[in-house]
Image (cartoon, rainbow, N blue to C red; front, top):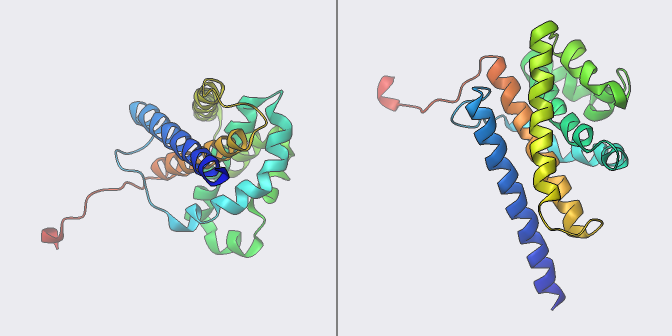
Length: 192
């Protein structure tokens, strides 16, 4: 009986993660912020679980009062990691503690400025556009969480929060790789 409940909970989390992925992908695609095919960047993707694990104490603490921040900051971290990958991945890997390094630039409350302005170097209209896009994505995910009919404080609710963070991270990575000029295109072997 408990195995069926656990499997049902796992399926709820998996379904929710897929729902978030599809919604954010479609939204960002409509804004031309990502390509029609999600980029693959295994170096950055492999860091997600460790970053999320490090982030959870801060993210959960902030979620009650600032859910959009709690969700949005993870998208910004994904963007920062893509930027590190493009610019100096060996140094970033050597330093480790990715989330803590980003957070500690100016503290959790200022993580948006740390990523958008300090790491990515965006100013003015570009910085505002990125911040607005992240806020809209986080708002969409929060709406999905609140309408999911999952009881708060349950293992399923926690699992859905983590699944949402994971998708926000991946979308942040995709957005920044797109901004850096990386585009996933079909490989045509006849062109060689």
